[in-house]
Length: 196
Image (cartoon, rainbow, N blue to C red; front, side, top):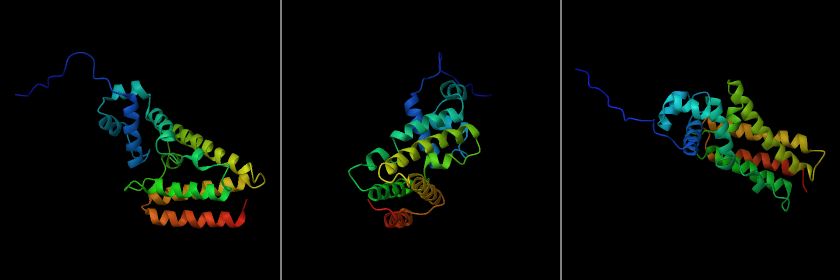
């Protein structure tokens, strides 16, 4: 005889969307956008599939919420590091070193949610990640342009390239020491070319 599963009566248990987004951020960070599927998310959040789609619309919709949360909880604090009272080279060095630390702090070596997402095959998620990356790059470009207007575009591309490389290396398993060594070497190259 098959045992009957007794389900509680009434509406399904509600879940806290903010807590769900935080849990999803951990999930996307421990794997990556491509690897995570909806069933991984619903299992991690303890919700059913209809509740997931009702709250987020799609996996990319959840990712959008994760990117917004990541800006406040996990991303490099650019506005704190890019200070007008410090030399540009010193600030950019601080950004690269913070990137190296944050990208490698997870034992899984997960890199940056935004930078890694900007290469995913899901067009909507890729667009969201690239928009977040472009906004961060614009903060860096504006900061550099205040003192080095002629070099702002090139130096921003340089910073972006190094940060993408640091994220990819973290994802590939490089440890924090290796990433910090790379960040410091990149910083010396910038400092030798541009002093305030």
